[in-house]
Image 1 (cartoon, one colour):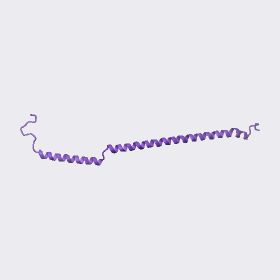
Image 2 (cartoon, rainbow, N blue to C red):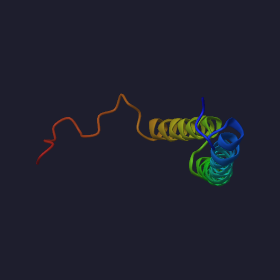
Image 3 (cartoon, rainbow, N blue to C red):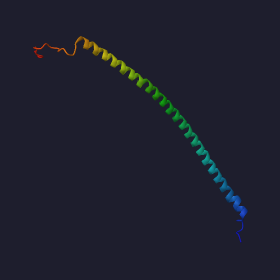
Length: 110
């Protein structure tokens, strides 16, 4: 036989309902805090993504400004080689390779 005053309706109304309400409020607060933290992380992620995108664009611009394209280097090399060949031809015309620079009896150091 149950003790007087401890019947099932008293237990439910005095103990279980407030306990379930506290548990529900605790879960609600946890959900709200997690949602708030997720929003903060999304905002930080968006900011860092934007910052990284800007840094990448600046780096690409620096690379485009600072480095010469390969086609331009090839063209410059070709033009430089042609100019050196012209200089060599002019030097060959002025002093043929078969003729010595110094006359036959002269000493180089003397």
